[in-house]
Amino acid sequence: MIERKEPIIISNTYCTWDSINQCIVVNGVNFQGVIPTEELGIPRINSGPIISNVTPNNVPTPLDVLILLEKPFKVFVLRQENDKYIFSHKAYLEACKASLVVGEVYDAVIYSYCHWGAFCKIGDAPVLIYITDWSICRFYNMQNVARIGNVEKVKIISKVVDKNGIRITASRKAAAPIVKFNQGDTVVATLGSLTDTNDGFFCEISPNTNAIVDVPPEKINFLREGMRVVAYIRKISPRGYKLQYLQSLI
Image (cartoon, rainbow, N blue to C red):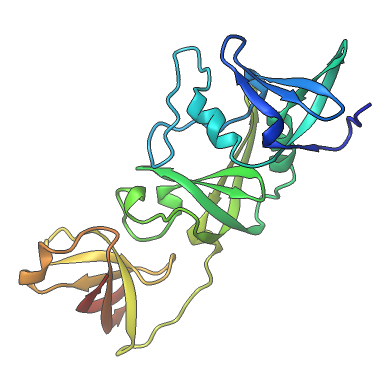
């Protein structure tokens, strides 16, 4: 008999994908069970390096399942039907999300992204960072600035419960400490979008600090959003920092 109150770890070596019944079949040493499609809880996204192709009825493809089965994962026991258990990975993820507290700061690992946001995990809880909450800098495409596997400090800013479960959004810029820079300091800046005058870039020297870097005309066409450059702080004003480009970083 498996205890229902606590999550259990399912070894991926015990699992196979049943394409006919659209479920994961679990053949453990002392038990058997299934994880139905609706209980997989696989984050589904439409772009980024980990692409989950979704059918019209929202059934996970083998790629979704392959990603889930890359390593052991946790499930809750929903019920027992005859000699088989019905497991839910989704219920486990919902419990993880429920434990997060709005206003608290956590370490989040980036695991995927699309142009408008980054998908990350706090522990096992999936969390979304919209591009507008990534930085005070004006970025247009998250694919240019997020890095898979990077750990970012984030603050939970919303926790919405609806018929589909719990949706968590977080902010990188809200979690960042206020950093003071001095005129003449040399800094590393991540380039955002071009300025309206096309003679420089909005840039990030910290997630909540406004900055613009001026770039020589002959360098403009060789730079793009997401690149990192070395610059020095030429001017400080109430509107932010004015930087002067020195060199690019590979």
